[in-house]
Length: 238
Length: 238
DNA sequence: CGCTGTATTGACCTCCTTCAAATGCGGTGG
DNA sequence: CCACCGCATTTGAAGGAGGTCAATACAGCG
Image (tube, rainbow over all chains, first blue to last red; front, side):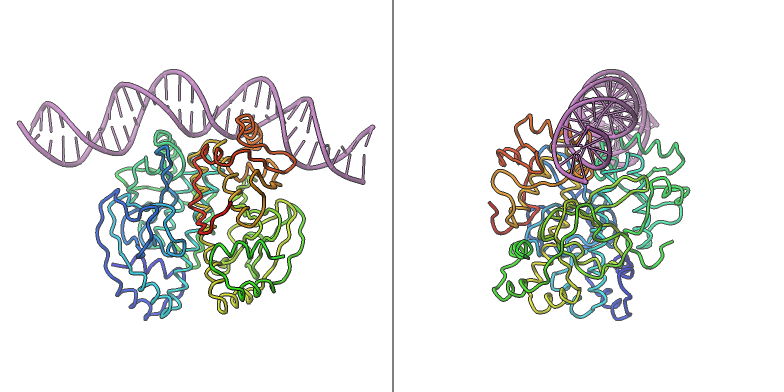
């Protein structure tokens, strides 16, 4: 089902029914296990990958073996929409949980861009929002302490997931290991553990069984100075 | 003179002479003092701003008054090429040194995109490289210690500036205050001071009179594991 | 010469890392 | 059903990188 992808595009443009039926005809996704490569740094991207279910990530490895996660990809997110212009990939993409991934031939994207201006607009919108998210992550890593950093990440994901119909008022599925979370915010997994505990003790959130529980979203947003403006939602979520 | 802008675009496409003469007809820039706003968060961008000379930055302010610099803009860089799609700016842009800035009406950009496919391609390329730089900055802040962080920033700027004909083998102009440098890499100005000193003591670089001197670029790149692949230069620089 | 803004230095503190060991837990095979 | 394994989480102790605060030095400039 492309529902998450369509859901996401709805936020970037006012799609028509014709647009929606066109999107419904896209190839179905296939299942990939957790922690498997999707796209590897240095390769030339041929097709466009879309996450339909599960969590994936963009990341870069350093020579010393450390991994920095550059972006989290949730259902509805595109992996390499514009990567072709740059020639080769400057980072890799892999699954974090088990995922279902759709692979669209580049020709399909070209067709969508030419035949469906609203979809084309929505696709450009998603790319720019991804960029805005990267900018906000820079702020997060540069200026917030550990617990606010995680709090902010969780607030962001709450909005992004609600955008595609995942999770509800009091939480959402969160399949990452602590090591993944650590690599995403620039901390160690040990400190991640202690930080999540302190957030629980503060009553701001609870993380168990790969589910994130947020008792009071407002309070959490207040705590970390979260302002969803950078996600550029025109339609309300919640 | 649009030389830096043209210079930059040459790296994103094989421009023709017709492209170049078209670019030469763009409006000239005007002078702005250091530390002046160019675009303010929350506003709706009307025109496209291009830095022709000097250093500027994208930044976000936090509620607690801290500033995170999200990107450095050097001659040839565009400020808000695609911002219109997102509606309002989610961050601000300001000069760091005195700058000359060109303002292109959106109509001009549309015209370039329609009449000059190679320029259009180059513009898309610049936008994607900006994004790649943001991703590399995430790695820098997340995984490198203070001295490697600065080393990496200086290596990046060396390549970006050479790309537009600024600086030479042993250094380049660098007008930022230590406070600006600190806000760009996520450290304090005090620690910036000590870190730059330690880099000097290591013989890796010298910073004085707003000029950065790099005795041995290879050595500096080696030190911080700098790999310019993310800048996606097809034509050699140096 | 004093004013202003930036760079520099010192002392102290704390947040986060590092390393290592312990705990928990779901699966698998005996 | 229990023992064992692999994997992730949790905990402890110690050290270090970077932050904070405040004082000083320095340079350009009216």
